[in-house]
Length: 412
Image 1 (cartoon, rainbow, N blue to C red):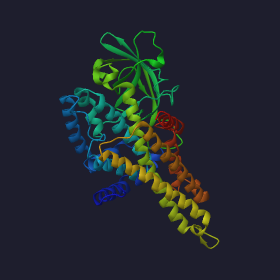
Image 2: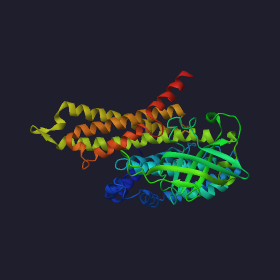
Image 3: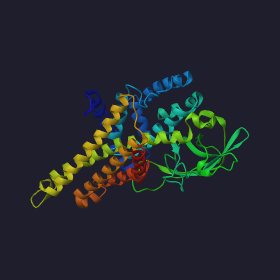
Image 4: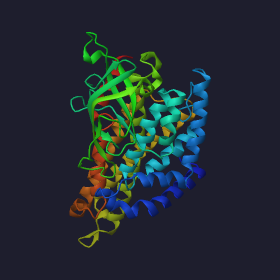
């Protein structure tokens, strides 16, 4: 694949019209925390029939899960053969939204991609019905809670949140931080270490995955954090103090690690997150480049447009190189999906590392090209530069991506 099809371009143009009507007029409110992104997400789903498509896909996934492991081997939308078109249609809104508001994509991606995705992959049919459908359609908002104050990049090994058996129930305790949608989530996918009373070191204990509902006794969801950027994506903390849940809240209703829960579930989601970051980076790079080209043509110094200056031309040329490289990575991901293949963790890490660095560098160069105006909020490159920085931090820092790539190379 080297370019969008005619059908995909039509979808892109329709998405752009939606964004101009629903997102652009609300940028200020989203940036200042006066408005959450969730109503916009729901309207996006309703406008383009994404909620109905989610219901149809949900029904097929439940049927495959009920049919047994063989029939459920290729989840729809997770890289099954012939899925390239679906992957492209998922990626196009991500790219277009990131021209203006990457935070909306983050909020949507965590709710649908991570929270709902985990439930649909690891849950029982009953759990899929109970929690999955409302998340997939956007009717409810989900959070994916793995990061803790003392774990950070060592998300699984450093995890201290615990799950202790007590009769037919589990008692959950712990603190999660930097949780996207945390303050407003209706449904929370929560990772914890099994405390079975053995002498097993905390680092090596089994990781279990639970689903929690807003308002559960002992669960406290913080107010949104104040952040450097990505203001349109609410982020907060979760505090669990002796939260009691039945086995029906344990994903898959089994502690068996061979069932694909816990650690395997988290690592699979890391791949999903990192591939999605490339599409987000592409949208942000495209917008920075567009704004920079327009400014270089119209900003006059010494009687001529600054675009006539070679140093400005160099900045624009480097931005275009970054755009092409990231676009090629996104297209390769779509092609792999069409071929029924998926990225390895190392491949997804390489994709994320380059794309995140490119987005941050392009955004900062755009600020520099705009000069003093670039530092002002009225010129949108200021917001995009603040938003871009987190691409190098969440879903695994640059440094973590390097370790995954290097380990893979050294093991060959």
